[in-house]
Amino acid sequence: MPIGPETPRWIKAEREGLHLPTIGWWIDPSRAVANALVTHGHADHARGGHGEVWATAATRDIIDLRYGTPAGGGDVAYGECIEIGDSITATFLPAGHVLGSAQILLERQGERIIVTGDYKRRADPTCPPFVPTPCDILITEATFALPIFTHPPIEREIARLLAAREANPERAILVGAYALGKAQRVIAELRRAGYAETIWLHGAMTAMCLLYERHGVALGPLAPVSETARGELKGEIVICPPSALNSVWARKLPDPINAVASGWMRVRQRAVQSNVELPLIISDHCDWNELTATILEVAPQETWITHGREDALLHWCAMRQIRARALDLVGREDEDEAA
Image 1 (cartoon, rainbow, N blue to C red):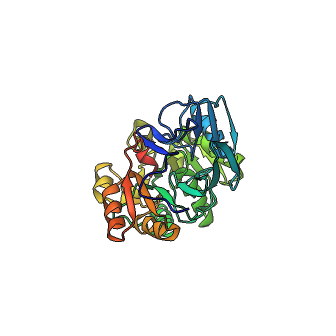
Image 2 (image 1 turned 90 degrees about the horizontal axis):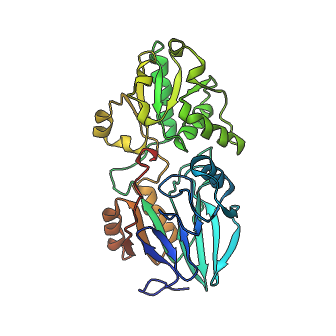
Image 3 (image 1 turned 30 degrees about the vertical axis):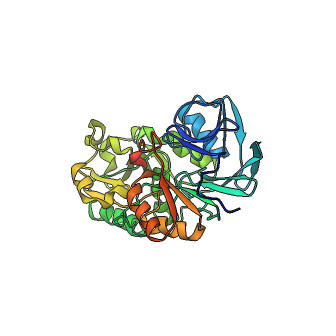
């Protein structure tokens, strides 16, 4: 159904999140609410304290692990449509971001709104791919919404990681990767590239890797660093949180090569400031070309932009006569490491 210049009254962008005021439901709220639809488990979208949480089974398990079990709600399968009141339905569709991540298609009396949450368009062995879905309003993230951000093929970055290991047999390769999503993707891509050796984990990584495996994501042989003498890790790949790279814990490894897997590694100054010897441009978000291609493919009448660099994408939309607006949502940059 065509949507006029006025925003549909049944959805409202508020500082704390997207609100469905006629029924009191929220999407990815930053404060505790009675009823929440949650796109995925990162802390700038999910939190504890909600009365009811409706999300995919994997996302609800991640919420249970990270924030505590929700009081109520339920699991929603990909493609499943649930009725939530006032003739509004919500359908969960793959977002391709991390395990369990979903877009949420909201429909009411012929109007269709897609809330993407965070998403990417690249293949990822740890989660189903993004499903482009026509809609009237597209609510999209904009983490890397500047033309300078173009992500290289992940195969290239994994090859660079393996080449660094081959060239430095006396040094540990210490990869800083966010504990939810990025770490498991790097491990799975190493396996896809043929690396079959044990991959060593910082203690903060273990629980989430086990959760991924319970959901059918094969990660191969893993072991905590605590189970071996640090000197035995020469030539080994170790995965840790980015915040641990320059810690006392890291300095006990054999002459580690500091690597970080993040879309922000496209910005050389970030790598230099963080003492990163091996920047790996690996992102779980769309780059500029993928964001703009998604808008053209989905062909919404209006685009709402949040979570990042809105100005450039607003200008791009204006140049193509696509109605667009920026949303001022709080807490949408809290997991910068995860990018």
